Length: 461
Ligand SMILES: N[C@@H](Cc1c[nH]cn1)C(=O)NCC(=O)O
Image 1: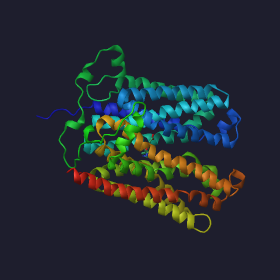
Image 2 (image 1 turned 90 degrees about the horizontal axis):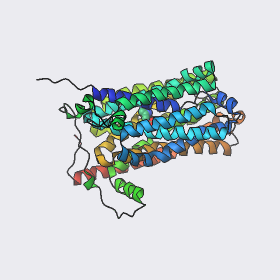
Image 3 (image 1 turned 180 degrees about the vertical axis):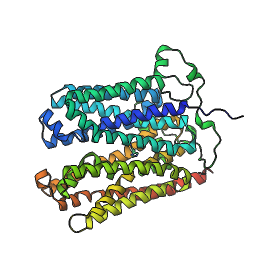
Image 4 (image 1 turned 60 degrees about the vertical axis):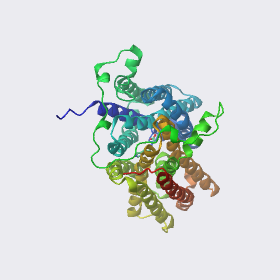
């Protein structure tokens, strides 16, 4: 007899994905509001540029602590806690005039943002079957990217129409609504309570009867289950050094190192472009107008969303080749950027479009790192391991953001009136050593992973 497919996993995931989209809106809420921010706080361009950098530093620095907390307090509490931090941060952003308080507000936004993505990623295997995970993960990323589109235009229009304070309070209110919704709907796993149920101590029928989609028969492709915690080599542990000890234990598994390098190598070009250096390159370097540059930035978001739809089913169908899919995309990004570097003078429109379409594929490609991680990380360490892997792309992005600024400064082209195309080409060339390092490490760790699995008789099917 056919039993009805449970809908709860889709509701839980839907609310979690919306919470992630709100985190991305909060993260990029200043992206299209540069001049408004400068006017509101009366700050120069350098101080303005410090906002995304500080936020990124906070985000990256908190990935491992958040991952550890995640394994202890669970995904629902982390996503909702992150939501509360972000709405406090945006309320402060709306109401303070002092730039240092605004920096503190961005720290809160960065901290809340840091809690969201890895918690949602950690929650998915509890609700979905292995063969569904690549697609569900990619669609989660895609919904997050939609959040970026919201900050590029609608948020800027809202702030323009109702003013800074009302606009940011509106954003905080959206965060509050989603957090309240999450408190009623999100559950770590089937049978686990919602936040409201944790507080009242009563579990509803929906929770008691909850089922995951993971129990259904695997039709096409299946993958190995994650290893048991006991397969992780023991290392001498001292109290107070638990984090280092855990990191060492996890990093002894080559599959986890492979996931780290996959995430390190693929997304930084798009992150750097979208978060900070894309607009200066397109306007000050290539010579486009602000609106042309804004249109191109929107195309990057759409390209990444479309790629997410394609890559999910592809990496699920070709489990054995998923690493090559990631490497192929990184190489394509490097080749397009290489052509821009070597092109004499300004890149023609076709080349700019190729860059704008190919570069953002690195975001969805980096989600393959989490697929690889799921095959190699024991469940009890999954939050920690997800945080560890997610640091990869953000460390690389931070290094590139800082190096581009440095190379521009060294050439005397560090301010908008001194920008030049040649200076930008040299500056963006700092990405080359990171691609070389990343791809080399991926190839090395892939071979080690294969050997590790062969020695233990494990196989990806
Ligand atoms: N690679 C991104 C996610 C993504 C998916 N599609 C495009 N980008 C990632 O690692 N995100 C982490 C985060 O907090 O957003």
